[in-house]
Image (cartoon, rainbow, N blue to C red; front, side):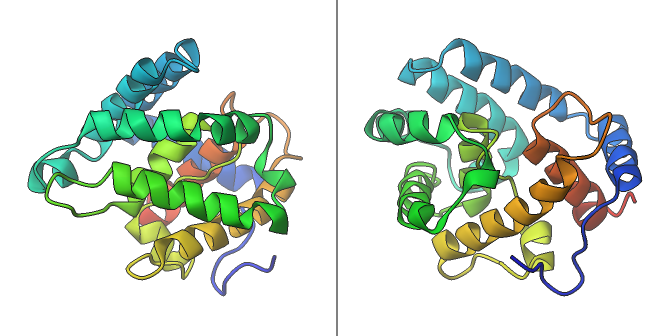
Length: 206
């Protein structure tokens, strides 16, 4: 899929610089590493998987959950249980395999987690949802934030499930090129792409 105007495929040098800047300045990334390790060690254990999501979101999205009165982890656990079979299927795959047949399931699982991850006052966070989905299935679901979504012209005020699906397709296009680069950091390629997007569009470090 063609990328939006103003978005190009990052070069190998772009990726390297972005990841270097990210590791230098984004100290919160340690919570991602801790959460990812916990998720891997507790896969198919809904309580442990929920804990991993809680650790990530209550640190990375601390301000959102403070303003919106917290996060109901029991709802998150129930959502994981209800979607475990779908998560297992997506976990076998990489985003490069995304096809039209996946669209309904991606939108459905996004909406279910978007509901489960809302603040206790009912305010939803598509950013939290993408982060949680990526933590669960890091090779298939990409991360975004408000700045990245705006730059990719998929801002999520309306129809966030459709906007996220479109962002997945854009991420697939970038993934297809970046996966061929040599000497990539030892991270999922979608995490590398997110570090590039974050460094360039969210923080202006590169």
